[in-house]
Image 1 (cartoon, rainbow, N blue to C red):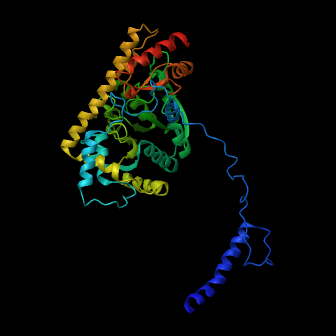
Image 2: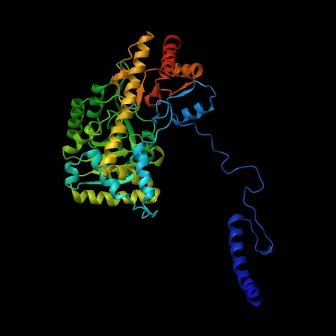
Image 3: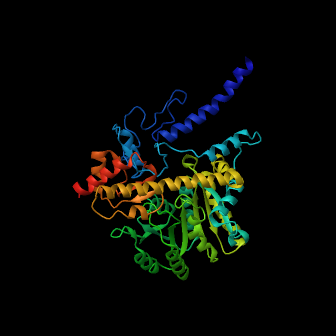
Length: 453
C-alpha cells in the first residue's frame, strides 16, 4: 500500500508537467495563474459540428472503377459490366487458375514457410524468374548481369517506383505517353515528379495505329526524353505496332537517345504466347541500350488482388545496375518499406516448376483464345444485323480491350437503354463478354449507331 501511494505521489509532478505542456500547445491564451490540477483545455473543434476537413470537396469517381460502382447500383437482370479489365469465364464469373490453386496448396503445405518481412527488393526467386520470363532465358542482359529487378505492387507500383527513380536520378524529366493510354498513366507519372506529354498513337479514322504521327512526334521529342511504350495489347485501343514498325520505333528512339519505359501488363494474355508478347521488349534489350520495364501478373495469372509485379532496369553494365538497385531501395523503403510475400511466392512456385509452368501456359492460352473468340462472335453479330460501319477493327485489335469507336452519347444511350456499362471513351473489356451476352451487346451497339448518332 505504501509503495503504491509513493508511486502515485512521485508520478504526480511529471503528470502535471505533461498536462501543462499540452495545455500550452492547445490554448495560446492559457494563463499560468489557473490551477493546473483542474484545467481541461478543449481542442479547437471539440464540441462543434465543424470538421477541420469541411473545406474538402467530393472527388469524382475514378473513370474506370466508377463504372463498376454504377453497375453495382443497377438492379436490371440484363446488366452487363464491360468496364473493368478483369477476366471472366463463359458464365461471367471471376476465374482463379487451377495452377494458382495448386501453387497455393503447396505453399500452405510447406510448414517451413514463415511470414517474415521480405527484403526491400522483394523475393529473390520471383525477381530472377520475372526477368527471365520477359527477357528470355538467353537474354544478354541476364547473362551479363547488367539489370536489376525489384518486386513491386503490381504494374502500377512498378511504374510509380520507376518514375520516382527517374525523377531523382535521370537528367530528363519529360515522359511521352501514347494518346490515348491507360487513364492512370498520367497521374502516376505526374505525381512522381515527371512532366507528361503525349505522342500520337491511335487514328480514329482507321481505328488503327497512327504510325506516321507516332514517328513524327517521337522524332521531334527532345533528346533523352522518356517514352512510355505498351509492350503488347495496348490499353485502351488493342492496337499494336507490327514487328517491322517496332523495329522502326526502336531505331528512331535509339538514334535520338530516347529512354524506353515499357509497361507489360498482358504478356501471354494478348496472343496466347509468352514469347510473342515479349518481342517488342526483347528487341530493345538486344541492342545493348538501357530500358525500364514494368511487369504485372494481374491478368496473365489472374492475381489481380494479390498486387504482384516487378520493375526491371536494364543498364550498360553490371556495376551501374548494382548502383541503380541501391537507389531503388531508397525509393521503395519510405514508400511501402517492402512488398508482400504471398502473391510473389505463388508466381515463383509456378515459374520454377516445369509441370506448373506448362499447365500455366495452357490455361493462359485458353483465356487468350476465349477473348479472340468473343471478338469474332461480336464482329459476326454486328455484321448479321447490318450495323452501319466497318467493324473489322474488333477482330484486328488484340488483348483484353476493344476500342469500339462509339462516342460518349452512344455509350450513355447503351447504359440507359440496355444497362451496358463501359468507359465513356467506348472501350469495352472483351474478357467480360460471353456467348450469352454477345447478342445483347450487338443489339445495343446497333441501336446506338442507328439512333444515337
